[in-house]
Length: 344
Image (cartoon, rainbow, N blue to C red; front, side, top):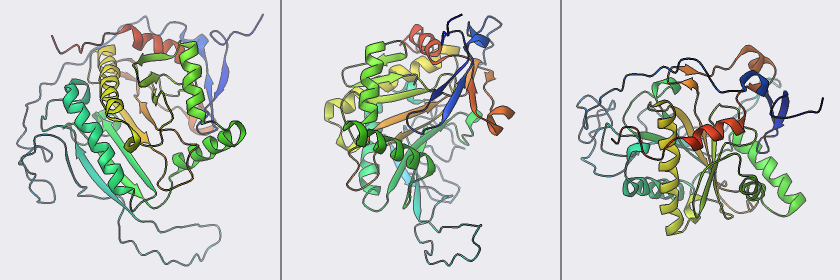
């Protein structure tokens, strides 16, 4: 019997982190044949007087939001990082390492509309989100080494407020994931003299089987090493270090590709698809030509709006594992419509 990756268990290496993922495709030759349960759509008002992110409302801190009409960014009222942390510290216990750090945290409202998500916003509004991401990166990069732009959408992944929003945490250090991606991209660039994710995008375009959507400037794939069932990776077609380096047409094209991808997420199980997502720009400063701008989307849903993937004991103790292959997941996402199921 010959080995077939579509039938037999195997491991796939995550090129960005160096870690491995166990894939068991024989356990999910078909994604799901049982009942696909749906959640009742929650009807939300355009403005919620009790929401601390809606225009004109008072936040937890007591500050009053302006009556904003586009995106709105403000300092997080409960910051995880502080700009004035004392940095002088003497390590006294060899095996108990500690490092004081500085940073700042901001909240970014995507829209004044309480009842929308990025998938439901029009392209002009999405373009404003892209531009705000870039302007925030430009501002915070003047002070901090790493600027993490991210979104947690839905209660399932811990979002504390349904208003469409994300966060931006900037720090004077490279977090673990950034360190791993820097290491792997740098090593590849030193070997090949070309960015890892540029070559990877070319490979995905040539093979085609893991592509979800694409346009003139962008490519969305379920990465070969994906861990979450419908995980996606958003990649530029050319070498780009940061969101601030994008041309006017590339920004517009990014808004378009995100809407198509996120609409497919919602349409897959006809629900407001939860996910954790974030942009990885090159760190601030010079010497990062080995980097490539990209975004990760990590949705936990597996078989329906009510069935999610959990991190099992084997995974905590040994290695990440998935049943549904990345190729199957990409096919499922390609099959659903670009038209949002709520649009009528």
